[in-house]
Amino acid sequence: MRLLAALIAISALSQTANAEALVQAEAAIRVADADFDADRLALELGRLLDEPGRLDAMAAAARTLAHPDAAQLVAALVEEHARA
Image 1 (cartoon, rainbow, N blue to C red):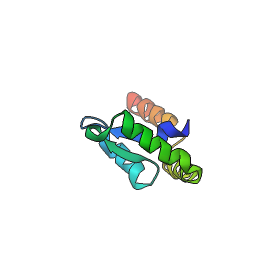
Image 2: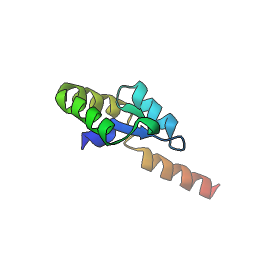
Image 3: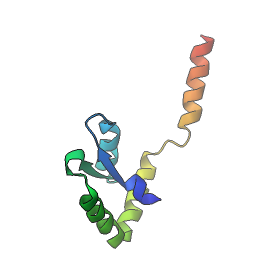
Image 4: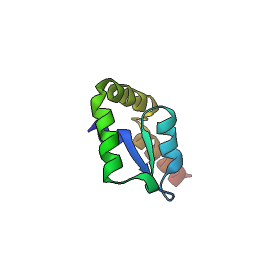
């Protein structure tokens, strides 16, 4: 499951800024669309699987960026503005 969060293919129309935040935090690997194919995927996954400590470090880095209460905060903002 961690692999899905650790490897991000960035398209020109995707949420590049969000992905970049993960890359900068060392929680993800950036692979541009032009470079992304089955061989590159296999290479990156192989590297990650060969370094379980790196996967753990990436998962920990991703957790530092998490906002587990984000849905509740957004709901509260919607309710607040709906009542205004």
